[in-house]
Structures are given as structure tokens and as C-alpha cells.
Length: 215
Image 1 (cartoon, rainbow, N blue to C red):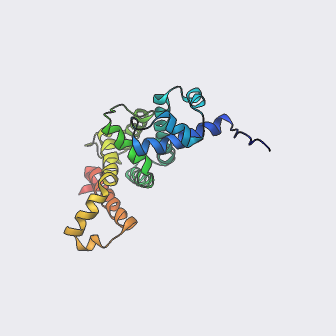
Image 2 (cartoon, rainbow, N blue to C red):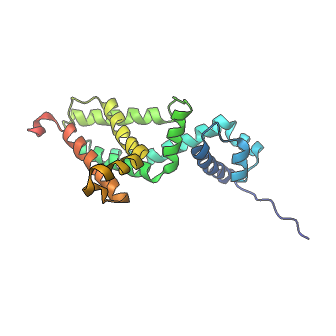
Image 3 (cartoon, one colour):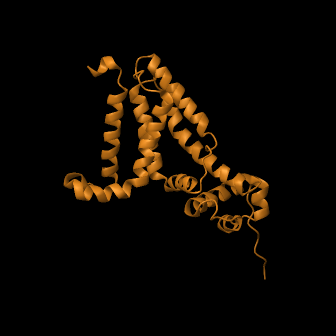
């Protein structure tokens, strides 16, 4: 009778397996509701090895959120860096962020759990991302592409908030639309999301236009 061989992973594969399992479990049950034993079982990586790679449960939780921010930056930064500082590029980036949040339920749930558990700390890399976005908006303002009436940091906050709010309360609004708007209520799934995004972009485009362009 042969003895089953133990599963051997390279360090990078081990980290990926743990992060994948941890993200799913933290998104499902939050930080407090997830144990290292749960993560070990789901990832098939021993607890001592998890501690070796991430140090602690807090370290692993930080790594999960850092990974989520990296995915966001990987999608948005190329659009902002490769094109002119103008409203069209900003709105394109906002559309990409909308798609990213909408297609990743784990990120939405991680954000919700952070608030429920009273975690008010910035996610790793989040501060740098907001600063970079604010600097990009300032450059667009200097070129006269975006109104100087808006404050870059708060514009970034508003853009993120408009996206997150829709996905957090989408089901509530879908039910409300069924009672208030027969025309819109007939739209399903992605079409309804597209309508909301188009309305947001239309509003942002008008609000960000320099005064001379509004006349």
C-alpha cells in the first residue's frame, strides 16, 4: 500500500492559496468571525505555515486588503497615466471602477464588514491612491479641463461614494423602482446598472465642466 504524497507548493503558490481562501472567508464572516483554523482548512495550508508567511491573523487581513487595493489600482492607474488630464479620462476611470466594484462581491463585503466591525483605518495603499488621484485632478484643473470650483480630494471621495453607494443599496433601489418607475423597473441586471452609471457620468460631466463651457 502506497502512502499518499503530501501536497507541495512553492512559497508564492502557498501565499496565493491562503490569500484566496482568506478573502472569501473574511468577506463571508468578517475578521472576528473567521479563525486561522478556518483559513487553514479552506486553503489546505497548515497554521504554522500561514503564520510564517503573514505573521498573524492581523497581518493576513492586511495582506487581503492590500491585494484588493492593488487590483483597483491596476485597473485605474493605466487609464489615468496614459492619457490627457481631462474630464473624459476621469469619467472613463470612474466607469472602470464601477465595473470593478460591481463584479467583485468580496470587495464590497470586505468594505461592509470593516464598517460593521468599527475598523476606521485606511486600507494599505488607499491613502496613496487618493493622493495620486487628487494630484491628477489638480493637473486637469491647471489645464482648464475641470472646474476649479471643485476640491480634488473631495471630488475623489464623491466619485468613490457614488459607485459604492449604488452597489451597497442596489437591491433596495431595484425594489423601490418597481413602485415608482414602471419604465425603469422593466430593465434588468446589467441594463439597470448601465442606466445608473450613465446618469452619474452625465451629472459629473456637467458639474466638472469649466464655467466657460457651461454657457
